[in-house]
Image (cartoon, rainbow, N blue to C red):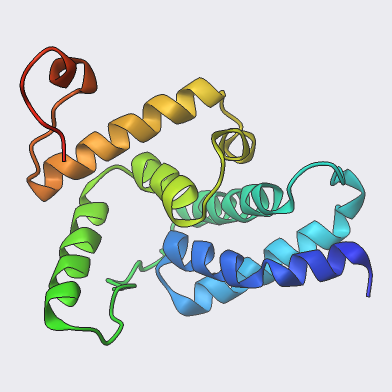
Length: 175
């Protein structure tokens, strides 16, 4: 087994989670992951060994997903049905389950760009640089988009949002 193939296989759980997040359908997400792996292996020569693999794979996966959406819209005969999927449906204590349900609901109410940046930075642990590379945007845009995404998420959840600059000049305590 080649080194790239082994590294790609090690990333499968992350790819599956991200594909499921994008498509919200297990069958579609499995197809996306398979297409991503096929593309990655076919374009293995394009991967630079000194770069992290996960952002490169996520970029392939994301592009595959949006290419499929564009084709589906153009064909208009085949519409993707995005089902209500609850990734927080794990068996847990009642309070935690309610909080997770509220969080999932809030995530579904913010923009796709904001959900995507939160998914990459917070859930998958991408650095700002890795997220910027995989989204093909500047690092500054990642930072500002993440800040807006967090503020929007807090607003949707009903938390009081105080900008750090306002908190520094007042007696307001941030928790």
